Amino acid sequence: MPIIECNTLVIGAGPGGYVAAIRAGQLGLDTVIVEAKAHGGTCLNVGCIPSKALIHVADEFEKASHFANSSAIGIKVAKPEINLSDTVKWKDGIVKRLTGGVGMLLKKNKVRSIEGWASFIDGKTVEVKTADGVETVRAKNIIIATGSEPVELPFLPFGEDVISSTEALDLNNPPKNLAVVGAGYIGLEMGIAFAKLGSKVTIVEALDRILPLYDAELTKPVARKMKTLGIDVLLGAKAKGKSSGGLDIEDADGKAMTIPADKILVTVGRKALTEGWGRENLVLDMDGPFIKIDDQCRTSMSGVFAIGDVTGEPMLAHRAMAQGEMVAEIIAGERRVWDKRVIPAICFTDPEVVSAGLSPDEAVAAGEEIITQMFPFAANGRAMTMEAEEGFVRIVASKDNHVVLGIQACGGGVAELSAAFGLAIEMGARLEDIAGTIHAHPTQGEAFQEAALRTLGHALHI
Image 1: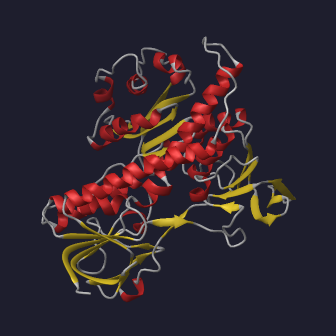
Image 2: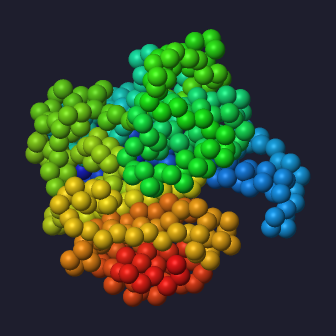
Image 3: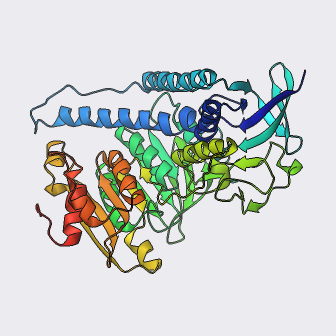
C-alpha cells in the first residue's frame, strides 16, 4: 500500500484525540486520526456517557420505588420493575448516536479516519494494522492520545465474575450481591447505582475513608446516602482474592472474612496506556508512568505531542479536550500555552460532588491565609422543592483580597454548577463579584451567591 502523508496524525479518537483532529481540520491542516475501536474512546463508549445513563436509570427507578411506598408529595404508583437488558439497549443507542456524531464531525472537517492499531516505527512514521492489511502513515506532527485502561489486580484477574466498570455497564441483570473493590469515584458511582437497582452492595476500601481525593466535609452527605441505601462500607480492609463464596478480604482488624458476591467489581484506578504502540521506538522522557510534557503538551521529541490520560492526572475527559484543542492550534501556528487555573472534578454519586480549585486544607497548605464558608441546600428554596436538601456550596477565598481560590459543592444536580465555579476562578473573581451578581430565583445557583455573601459575613437566608 502507498504511504499516507499528512501534516497531523492523531493516535486515539477519545475525547482529546477527536477534538484535536476536528480542530486541526477546521484550521485547514491535513489530518489523519487512527482508532483501534470506536470513535469517542473510553469516555463515549464504556465510560463517562454510558455510566451516566445507568446512573440516570437507577435514579429514576429509585424515585419510582419511593412513590410506590410513600405518598408524601401526592404521587402514588405501583411497584416498579427493572429490565436491565432494555436499559443496556437504550444506553447503547445513546453511545451509537454520539460516536456516529463524532465520525460525521471528523468527516465534515476533512479528517481521514483509519480503523486499526497504530505502532510507531520512528518519530514521524506509524504503521497501522487494519482489517485489510497494514497502512503506513508519515506525518509532520503526531499527537499521542492513547488514553488509559482499568487497573487489574493480579490476585483478582478480570473474568466472568470479576469485572471492571466496562463489563458492569453491560450486565443483563443487577447482581444479587455485588462487591466493589475501591471507594473512589468509579466504585461509588457504580455501587450506588446498583444498590438503587436492588443489589446488595458491599464496598471494600484499603484506606480509612471514601473518595480519598475529596475532603471529609464533602463526602459526609454521600456516606449518609449510602447508609440509607443499605450499602456496607468496609474501610481499612484489603481484598485478597476470589473464592467460591465471593470476595475474600482482610478487615481493618486483620480478620479474614468472605463477602458474598455474584460479581466482584474492581475499581482501584486507571493506568496510562503507554505500551503496545511502539513507545520503545521513540525517545520520550517519562514522568513516572506517564509521558512527560511541557505547557504546550510537547514531548521530548520534536513534532510529537501527547494529551489526555497518557500524560497524567487529572484523568478527565474535559482536560484532554482542552489540551487537544490547544495542540491543534499550536500546530497551526497560533500562540497557545496551558494556563488553566482550574479543572473542575465531578463525582456523579448521590448526592453529586463538585470540586474546582483549592479546598480549605489545600489552600492553607499552599501558604494562603483564607476565609471560607458554606451555604446549605436546606436553606435553598429550589432544593426544597426538588427534595434535594442534602449538601451545600462552599467557597474558599484569600483573606486579604477576597480572590476566590476554590469552590466545592455536594448536592443533587450540583454537577451543573461546575461551569459557574470554573468560570469564576478562571476570571479571577472576588467574593464581591459573585455576591453582586444577580442569581435567578428559585435556583440552586442562589446557594453559590449566598455562600459568597456568608463568607463576606452577611448571608441573607441563613
